[in-house]
Image 1: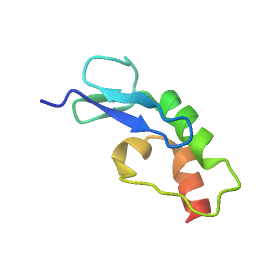
Image 2: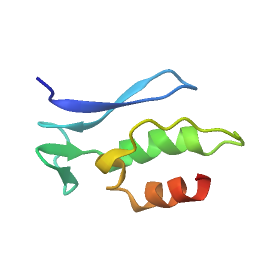
Image 3: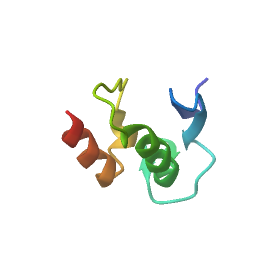
Length: 78
């Protein structure tokens, strides 16, 4: 049974909980999941703010869309 979602990175090889049923008491909510937008942004921008010519993004999904800054960055690199 799923209770949350991780954001996994390539460069630092880490997993960050970005959405969970019982964590992150804030206004960002997708279905039954509370979204930690700050953790999502901090982790994603660390990966996306490089001079890399190719990005691998699997399932941007609705959680990332809770962040206006991330939506803008995805448009910039696409």
